[in-house]
Image (cartoon, rainbow, N blue to C red):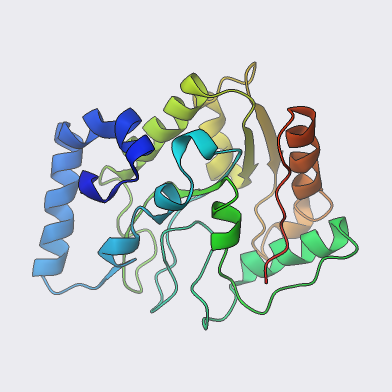
Length: 225
């Protein structure tokens, strides 16, 4: 599993892959496939968030919960889907908010957020795999232990990161973040069920860029083509 990881992440996380919980998780994933279940995303994409956003390049962290469980959707980046797949409702609302925040923003016709990841936006799900068509099916198997450790390591070893915590689940992760060293922006989840409760109008994308500029960093170009 670890061999698929980008070198800078492997350096800070290497010890995790030898821990009992990770070995148990690996066995569980092998069992799922032996039983004939389809697991998303495909193996090569599980660590995409890390491979597109090296540890020392992270500027912004957007926390999701679970990969999409439909065919061809998940590719290892939270909220993102592969090109050619219908843009999911939460991401549609993220685009809508971006168009409100930036007058020149053009809503993309696809949902591939790789361009954000390549600029330093860590698109991290709490759980990195899921059984096809069964939301939440790989929760509490060990992934959360791993991704909580990722957040803790970022908090400890980096400074001035912007964490966007949308919805109650993501906001529970604030306890892992040193808020004296980092910036935490909280709002409702962009899901259609909650977006009108404070996600719309949060201006999180513009605020994140303002913080980055104050920190002397290049802001994120949120426009996707």
